[in-house]
Image (cartoon, rainbow, N blue to C red; front, side, top):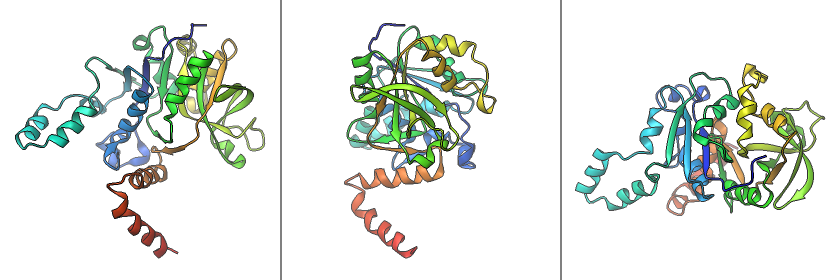
Length: 295
């Protein structure tokens, strides 16, 4: 097993087609749909940066060039803002611009699943532990989910998966983990099961889309057979890695919004809008009135 080292790199698999948001995603990548006034991908990148990540690796597909453009300087826009003395807007753009040389992009030419997308980042990650953040999932909590995971990784040296609790009758919808002994702010994972039949789940802790993995996962993925959905499944590879290496769960205590689904995307917009002091006063009342009018 690789020695526990600092988690410097994060992988963002952004090659998905976003078919659940058609027709909008015919022209706009789902990761660029906005929650209030920021693209979904910005929230996920901010979470990684807050955790100390230094290098952002995007696994893209066709028609995703706008994501690369977003994380670059827009010369014409900045010149126009300077000419109009829009200093606040300029400062905002500068604040979201990654450090030069800290972003990389690689292509997933075929939609062969999450495991395949992760494998496509192998040369950019190299032989070191890395974070994996699913770009559809945005988190809201007192502590960033990835920040807590990095702390647990540094404490334990184990592969780390973030989990949350769901209702016991909902476990068949998720990847579920078995609960072992306590480790820091989490626990040892004894089992991983993808969408277990109702009544068979080892717990009600589900995997929420955040991972810290050792680089040995790439070797497993290189020969991984297709699984559910005829895709290369990351969970299958993690189960094999768990035979040789420890996995720990970080129990995230906050809210997760699945922005790959319409209801989750709408709820994220409402939640983040109400958390903004500059927006809440103008939307809270109308939202209450709207809900009341539907009763």
